[in-house]
Amino acid sequence: MGYMKTAPASARADEPRWLTDEEQRVWRSYIDASTLLEDHLDRQLQRDAGMPHIYYGLLVQLAESPQRRLRMTELAMSAKITRSRLSHAVARLEKNGWVRREDCPSDKRGQFAVLTDDGYEVLRRHAPGHVDAVRQAVFDRLSPEQQKSLGEIMRIIAEGLQPSEAGADLPWLR
Image (cartoon, rainbow, N blue to C red):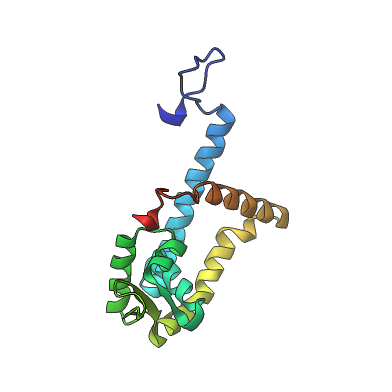
């Protein structure tokens, strides 16, 4: 049943707060759009650059960082992924020659992920096609007001899912 059952008017206090018909419509629209968008962008990058969307995002994060490098923990946090998933992705990017790891001089356990010149070139070469895919899939379909609303809504949701208290169950802490 999950979120699929409409709450009866006489719902008991111990009953789940079922989604209303309108909430279900919004939720399903979100699921459909986010699933289709991720698939669309992933296919575009696989076809044009030979990499999944998540790898492209990691290269972008590194390219935008000082000296094109980030500690692995910071990269996991900015990418919103587990450290294990990041380690696997970086291993694949290393194999392609797009990223290298460097030990952190101030922390024996820490490592940096560093975007190589080849990685930067791959990113530079494929960024225009990716930006076109994002623009066509998202921004060309929305008015400026809708774009602003979407950004505000996504920010509120993301902030709500990233509690700051100790012990929060966040991907990059796993």
